[in-house]
Image (tube, rainbow, N blue to C red; front, side, top):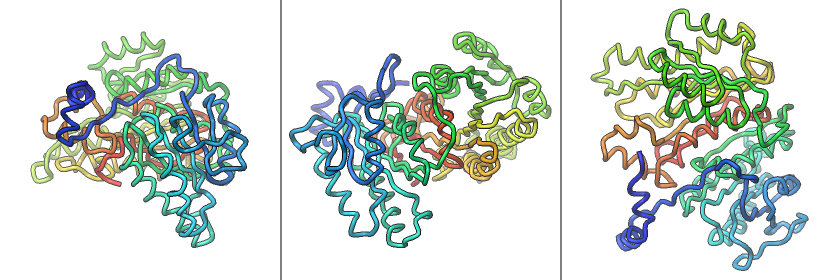
Length: 450
């Protein structure tokens, strides 16, 4: 369903009206288009500590236009506020900020450039995980980056985003994959997020097809977000297997034929589902995406046992049972990537969704609990938590709730299935084993939750 307010607010008449009334005017977001050659189409600005030099070495593969600001040691041209080009991407290395006085560097770097951002610019702050910093004053300063980045995300305009990446020791080699995601339109609906990047031996060999040679299974793949995930994984080179309930066989077969993949009709809650799945995957998997899920909304006072049991069975129990079976049968290859579709409801809760929120919070816990276990095989598991995404399900919501869901975010609009799919495609890359046991929100920095 299209966002009519978004379209109207950006029309000639609508722009004048919303500005006169003081109403918000969300900007149409730029998203990744087929045939695009570089992650950044425009100027990239670098500054801060030594990690900025690491990014400068990568920069020619990201953009043709790179500058430095307050970074005399970088071998790129200096950018001058008010005179330099509009900025499409910004990276600031805050990893060396060692006490509260040093935090002023955040203001000194970002304040002059905020009026020089191009539409839909992407900002990224690099730091060190506070819990791994020995010096207490430095740990405090690194933790302060979270409050700064999230506040900045709520001040940015014109579709711009900002995120924070804590870079662990030895993880510098995996910066390129993260930069290609966070500085490009692939992260259009990701803002105000904090992730930790650790060392990982695997590398992407071909950035035009980063998933080439990898075999992927997507559950709930017949339509909606699941179909978008399958399409995006296939675009990036994966061989896809699409799984959904037998009732969705026609849509499943049509999508599989279009993507050159395989279709598997299976009820994941069936007593023998695990055995059937193991048998259907003689060659095993490199990528597993648990997308299948249902809602049965009622306030807890009116919640029936049937509603509660159905949601927990599909959303939480089935992914655990199937993953356990695949792991024990050695069907998850070494270096596999597992992604669980959680929700911001599982982080912040939502009225009338105690069953759904419990299941989605459980998936985040599942990722945290299984991360060390999978890491022994070089594999990883993470959760992606979408916010308001434009689907058939959200189109059926009452108008007031639908509009609130769209507007109550820093970007002032809903996301698209593609936004969720792009995040999963990045987490599915070989080098993204650097992210493990974490939850990435794809919510436009929704005001619901942290």
